[in-house]
Image (cartoon, rainbow, N blue to C red; front, side, top):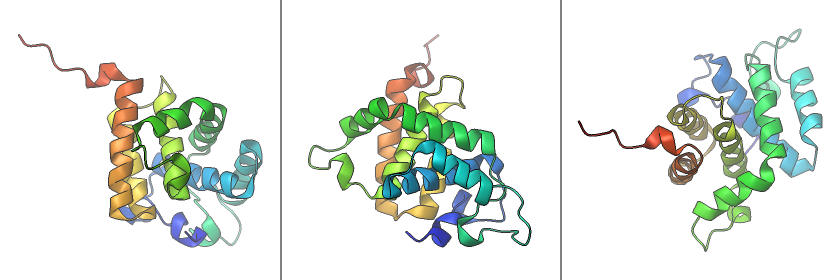
Length: 175
């Protein structure tokens, strides 16, 4: 997907709804995609994004050239670092919930980056509630992917969330 298209992806595809934490997630998906495609380290990509894509820059106000100006940089960096540092644990979790005939490398690379970013946030025990993480990444997915890929992403994230945070999905106790 061209960078310009990915840059405009926010909740519901509305770049006017400037939500810094959602935009951090958009930037994290972009960075993980770039890292995989170009073989660049997480730290290299984080540095590039913080210097050239996140924050105010003279003469650049919006989402041109793949920018995500209002992204919350600390969350962005934490997601990218966690996704790469824990990739040996996150990738098998993703793969374990995919159909046997659909290996990780068969996934669209943007979907793969999105699942890794969301998996990283679900991995963080001090992160937002699992349902919030899932909803945020589904919002991002709608800006990047076609509906069938969004549905697959939803199913994968639900199963990963239930595995990593079962207490958040426990049935209420009958009184």
